[in-house]
Picture 1: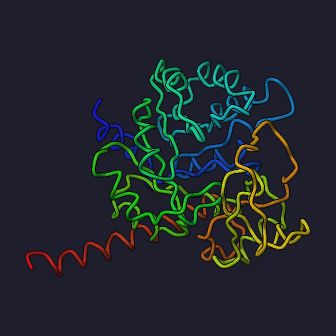
Picture 2: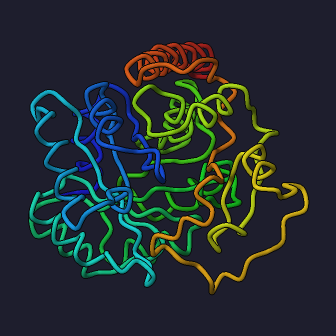
Length: 320
């Protein structure tokens, strides 16, 4: 199937061309289901399912039991494909057993992971921070790309979204989701106008009723803005964006953080930095803690407004 067709078929299942990004600790079955029922791809990291050997199986079973594939958007599970993730292969067995519609892979592209998802007709989106890694992901069998640009929450790149999309679109006509400070429906429209098929939205969902985040974390999102974010690799060995308030609460100066050794990257489940709050720059539009449905409603209204504005501009300049 042509990759353009894959993107079109997925868009047809959505009310808004967007993914709810998988959020460390924060994403859970309630948030994932609410996202899907609101018309965007819902997701959670496999590693968020903890507490027992069958926790992931229970989470996926719960999500599937509450979704209607005929009316709700599909869901995704995120896999950290890094050597420190000891659960990777056992979690993949659960994913294949349940035929999870979309798998989002991070920090490593492995053909055998893609092949496992393809064995039942699932899709793999791989997140990348530059054109080089995008090519590698597609060469190893990814069906779609998540381009993680400057300003994204959690692990993020340093490139502006515009050249990043442009460079990848020179050779790739398949599905692209754009990540990076998309704090409104206008941002979703901008992502589409720039060449993406979907927006990839994370941080605003932290300040929702369904999210597994403390009230302090949610309030920090509501009260924060782009200048309250710091970019550092101290906490995981990979550069990412975090709320300065949580860094200060840990007794550190967010403006003078030391560099971490990338070889110390560890996703085995360490909770040393569990109170350091990942967050992107696109939070200024978050004014209250609301339901996921209300947040997606706002994005949808803003998206339609932005599309109308672009269409009006197109009419003015058509033929000139």
